[in-house]
Image (spheres, rainbow, N blue to C red):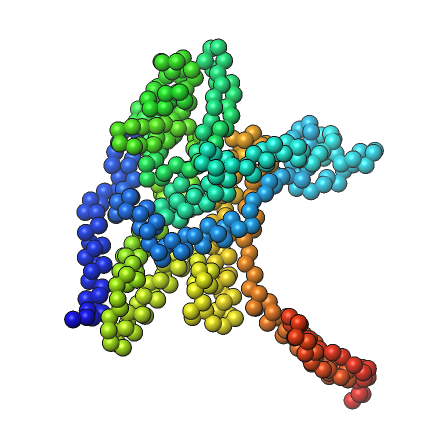
Amino acid sequence: MHMNFKETLQKPVNYIKNMYHKDTSTGTDAGDYKIPHFPYKDRYIYDVANYSSVLNNILQTIQTELFKNGWEFIPKYEYICTSCGREYDHEPEQKNDEGVPICSNCGNIVTKPDKSSIRNVKKQLRRDVNYNNQTLTEVLKEIEWDLDAYDSAYLYLEKNYEHDSDGKLVNTEIDEIVKLQPIRMRIIKNDRGMPATDQKGDSIRFCPEHRGKKTKRDYCEQCGRETLPTYFVKEKGEEKKYFSNDEVKHLKKYRPTEPYGWSPVIPLWQKIHILYFMNRDKPPKGPKNFAKYTEMRNGLKKEVDSTYGVMPLFQGNLEGVGGLNNEGQEITITNSAMRKGQEVFNKKLFPWLCDQLSLEHWTIELNEVETRDVAQEKQQINQRRIQNAVQMSQIGFNVELDEKEDNKYVSFKYSGKAEKPSEQ
């Protein structure tokens, strides 16, 4: 016997109940850090995002839209004083006798940012940035995936460290850029919120050559080299690996006030699983059951789309999109979500990355994402041309539709002369 609508939903509901955590504590104390605790196991959250076809389509769309126009180096200012360092967002009005712009603060010459300072770095970042043969954009796409799936992402700069004869750190060089698995990462912070600090207020440090061991000493007991403050730890079973905040950048997107973020998958958990079973199993028979089933499925899908701000039009789903106003609204909503997504990189990640690359006067920005509503643009242009034709006709011109097949927009041909308006 074929299941009815109610029986169809019972299977995902029972499945969801079995996966729910009975423990509702806010976190588990692990000494120097708190283990993140969610209503569902963090591994499950990550897996659902990876294996749900509904979420996969959305997350891949976000990746494509966010990075489709690439990234560029952007100067932090238009001019800078070579003496006092004052920055200007436009050319100073004051000039010296030779007509060269000078600083209004100290009177010395101001210059534009030196492009030669980014030439080598630009070449490096345009090539593969790690031994997995990934470009920077490919690594950033992985970071974005972690943000959308887990709301927590970690970019890691693996560095080579140079020490002098006394063990003091004198130079660092970035060897590769990769992303770290977020479900294995923990933030080192005491109960008062002080980073790289234990509960007593003492600094927690590690040696880059012996990352599996933490210390309170400024120099390693094993090799005598200078240690670094410990901001993060990666756990894999009993094995631990420590990192500094100059090596790892932690990013959040949807709930930045939470220490480990708050994945959008959590509030969507039940809806995503119901959609999974609805897509997998046969729909119920009967017109009424099928109508309820379809209505519910579309409603659940709409809620998931809205949470991420990715409308059906961008996912290749044109069902129900009809109408210029509706299409334009979907473009507006998705463009807004993409701009907010780019802010995480432009305001959080890239300034930190440029600091690590010793780029004092430059930053990196993703090129703007702005999908044009071509249909609406065409409608607006045609409306203006029609209005113009009406006005031309009213003043005496002969107006004739230009029916050229290759014409993209409506076009008119005009002849005759304008008539003088009659006096009243």
